[in-house]
Image 1: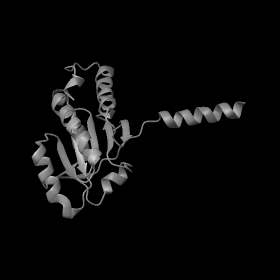
Image 2 (image 1 turned 45 degrees about the horizontal axis):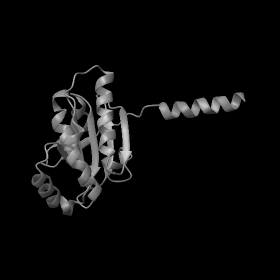
Image 3 (image 1 turned 135 degrees about the vertical axis):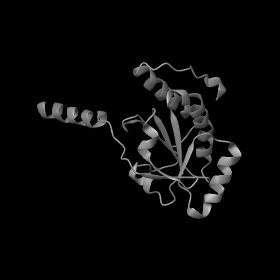
Image 4 (image 1 turned 60 degrees about the vertical axis):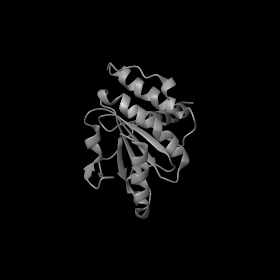
Length: 172
């Protein structure tokens, strides 16, 4: 019985242990270079791995853009990281331009950032706090998943007692 209790305790400790993402170089779509932690300075960051061929990724991105715009005064940033091949970078640029997305876009053609952040499917969405701690991780997209992301954002602001303008889900 005592052993079983110890194992349960250890299992729950592992589940509750927060993961910290590593800082690493990031190449933005405009060709400039920065570091991942530069995005964490003002508040939480939603990191989204996507590709131009991924239909669910594109469906999620419209919601992420709305979150980026709505919560930007509260420091939220969205960093959409394209995993398209170097040959497809023209498609990435034209797609982003055509949608007038306001969030940050990075490129990861060799999927090095994707691997380091343990993203295995697309889209993979990771919400990270200012210290680099993972608050939320989700792989794939089904309609309604955007509400889970929204809840994570508002829970984060509520926990830190940060005032924010309520988000109307009917605008999704």
